[in-house]
Amino acid sequence: MTSNRSDKVADLLKKEISLIITNEIKDIRLQNINITAVKVSDDIGIATVFYTVIGESIHKKESKIDEKILKKFSGMVRSNLSKKIKIRRVPKIKFRFDESIEYSENIEKLLKNLK
Image 1 (cartoon, rainbow, N blue to C red):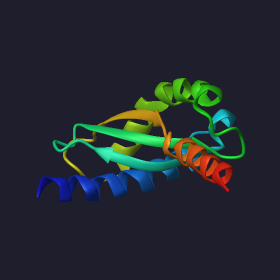
Image 2: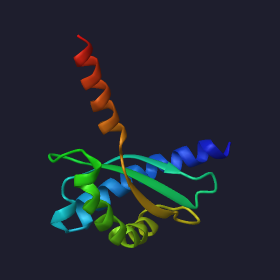
Image 3: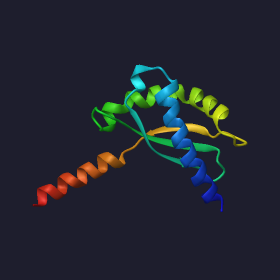
Image 4: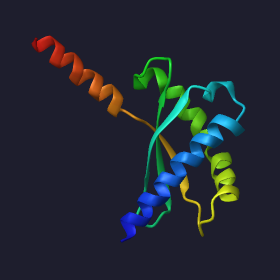
């Protein structure tokens, strides 16, 4: 039952965080950030927000600076969330680079090499 609630909260957070980053944070360094997924702990205390960078290298080492920038803005994002969504406690926001795209790209290369 709890996971169903946390899944609903994760979906809501993904939508709202994307809107906040796109429309409310006016930092040019964040204009190419794409929120790919949000995982919320069962107690809804922590939300891990996975992101990629659009239009640039999708490799982690080149996008690491974006994680530092996003960490700086996590308090602002959380504050904006508290004004937009009606839940008892807005979770702490942690940003993580989404490595699944890089992983799938590597798998695709391996499959092409097999041909």
